[in-house]
Length: 153
Image 1 (cartoon, rainbow, N blue to C red):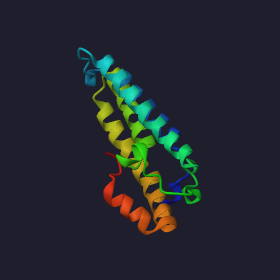
Image 2 (cartoon, rainbow, N blue to C red):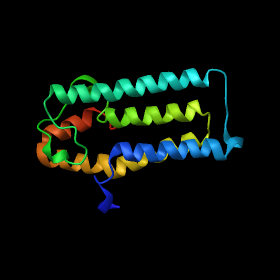
Image 3 (cartoon, rainbow, N blue to C red):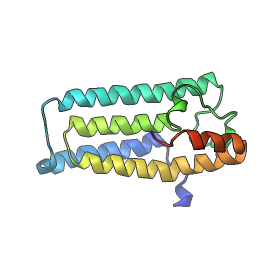
Image 4 (cartoon, rainbow, N blue to C red):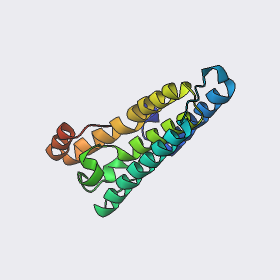
């Protein structure tokens, strides 16, 4: 697995799981659970995900540091303001919320599985290597930040 670390762009990982969610909804309709308001809930989740991801990008721009998921060693600072006071990975959290929104829109129970697999994969292939790079670059500053802010929520 280490050979895949930082190699598959997070949007590509997200797209894979979004397609898997759609395929499950289409191929396994017996696992679909439409309920009153499921599309409204999907819109709320999508809006929350978009806001979360956008807030992460804005905070990185304000700190004038890189958001390149392939080169975390190029970070100039530990971003700990704005949404980064609540989650260390708002962009990935945003992707997970939008994926959950798709599962809700299509009302598929398999969405619970695909969102879980996405979060597991992004943690293993992206977040853990980023954390190692940031720890090496910023030492105790990053360690203190990690102790106060959760990885996801």
